[in-house]
Length: 413
Image 1 (cartoon, helix red, strand yellow):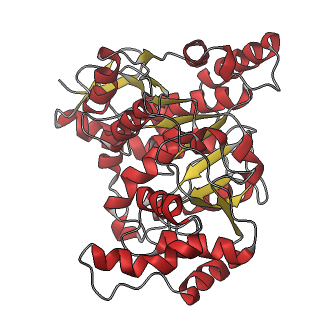
Image 2: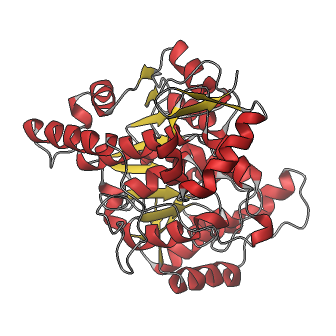
């Protein structure tokens, strides 16, 4: 499902070389009411960020805004100091390390903060996004696809949300994962992904156009989504409701001329309604790694993989991950992988006990109309069968779940 871009690709800006010039870029972008489009227009009109900053108060007065003051030198220097403290690096549009695909988009961020393995900025990327309240099958599919894409030479980019995003990041930590944040590159959100946040900062890459230390608000997520799609050759939606942030990412991908792909789901499962709508409207149906690569074509294949090799590796990974997962093991210190050699398990929930989601709600959130093996549910929740079985029985007696032959359970009709 692609959409041709009819507007011309913007001419790349001349990146700032001197530290003072980079400070001016940061000041201009952090100034009140200066977004991406206004930043580019001011640079086009005044030549440099320093000249634009000097003209900005008069521009504001002409627009009816009195007593306007741009972002101060002190505030910008404080942000740069905070970035150095958290190990973040400033990447400006036009820099050699600025992601090439993102630079081609009409609303490319003038600057990005990058924390972690900045060499991943040059990696070919595929975006994997989906529901926060993901089902167990949805998370399993996300892990399968992310792991196979990593073995094929792609970095996986997502938004570090709970559910599908977290599963995709965890499965691609070893091979390369990029988390685009709605808040500052140092701001942990959500808190339940704190461990994964730190792992990505060490073994992957965190990116954000927002100020260091900024806690995300709802308005920050749609702009974040256009960066996710802009970085990638294509976007794969694993689970998504009819109205969700994942569909915002898919729409941004269409506007940027990216390939949009979706994993189908059960018609009765609201978490699959968005994916099914995308497929109805022309998105590529995804059953595995082969469908993604076929949709992208040979030009998107990582150069480091030869054609005869990447497919075998991807299929081997897919076959391995399709087998029942071994018992979860804790992460070893200093390792991005689980002790069993697979992908890292979900981080422990750091919330106080009173805020932890009750077990029956956790179970219902992971079950859909499509049956799932009870053993798989036990592994996904990381709980002993003796603790899970009584709750399953209670839910069955309440008529909320149904048991099927072969040890399968699903939501009741």
